[in-house]
Image (cartoon, rainbow, N blue to C red; front, side):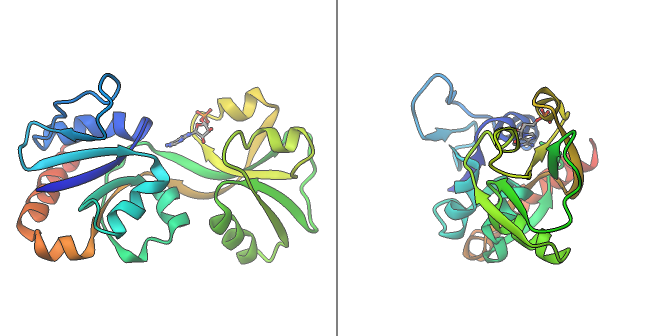
Length: 208
Ligand code: AMP
């Protein structure tokens, strides 16, 4: 049995066609049923659809053999304990700093609101900028508007969310896409099943 943990929402939606091409189609609809473990068209594959930030944890501890998560989440988790064999090139976006469109470029110590505390810390430290990082769990865009922070670090796709809140993208930290991650022990113990799925996904990606 292979268990694949998939991030809820956009990543799950974009992973579905990819998984389908590898012969994995969920039998249960997570929107309609309350099941947490979804059966699929393959008797030997189950999906668990969970919060993005929990995917690396499930895979690291072997609760799932494989996972699909954004590079942003993997960077923040510190995913050295996982194999990351495939860039699935889905849910693509950019991890950026953003600030109010009229805000000056700060030279001194800055306050940054983000849910990516470790990544932001690393980024500003790497640039020699003193940054006080304020952890938020959502609605980061609000922070510069109410004086909580000088800037934010968040994912940007179309830029519409920033624009709607009078913010603008400033610096690109990293291009982000979803990755397939594999538990290290599972890679050995279930090598045949995992290798064959990786192979199928790789072929599908090459043909896209
Ligand atoms: P947009 O307005 O299209 O730039 O999207 C920005 C909003 O969507 C922000 O709240 C982001 O956190 C979120 N977002 C954008 N791309 C992704 C992604 N690939 N995965 C998860 N959240 C995303």
